[in-house]
Length: 117
Image (tube, rainbow, N blue to C red):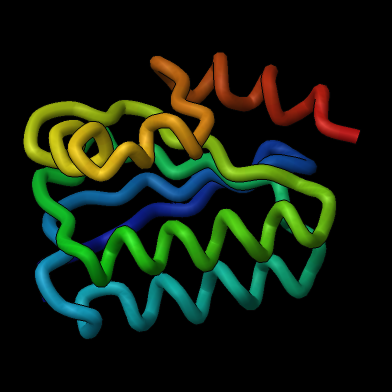
């Protein structure tokens, strides 16, 4: 497996720290199930810390989009932090950096999400 993750909760915000690469859909199957399980438990204020994610492809982008859409439908939001290198290039080239809220770090992201009503 190319991707691992760590979860922490600072109620009502849930933080996913991703490490590694998203190369195929198989890399994030477990993560997606976990994310949607937590969404169904009303953890719809989400931070994805991508500071240790070195690569993602269109499958990963699709996963982030599905998560963003679901969290917003539920009245929450999704914020990305720590975007650098190849991941930053992909978000920039695809103009996704204009759709997502991107913060420098988790603290900033949590503050922003705590303002969501």
